Length: 189
Image 1 (tube, rainbow, N blue to C red):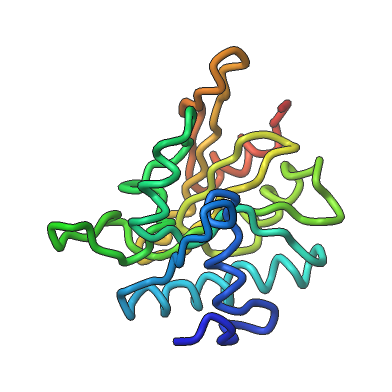
Image 2: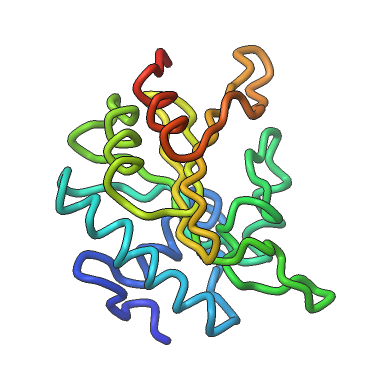
């Protein structure tokens, strides 16, 4: 599949492959090797990203698909802030032993709504109330929002805490369904 291949109404494959700062700096290829990864990225674009664009306008992807090569490069950063075996950015890709990197499968992106860069809480609430998704990781009103689409479709929301001194991120409150909606409506960060 060519990187300029249209995945959905608003997104090409290239949009989801080449949005990471580390990928851009190191000029990594970052191409999926597994056909299932292409399909998962397309499902994410059609079922999650397109509806977000239609509701809020254009978005900026800050982190999309993550090949094993990109994961290795990011992990060398001081605070890499990735968990390839959990976060679904590696989609259906395999490690060097032939095992799926993230058993949750599916696909994930981190993004901002261009017109609302400091209102990510409102975007998160809308997504939780209106879209089917697997996992959402919320880092703060002015931080990119992580969203995934995968086979579990758990509607799981995880609030992430960031240590102001070290920058290390740790899980905070979490919820599913009504508990997640209530938690998102009570956000204060």
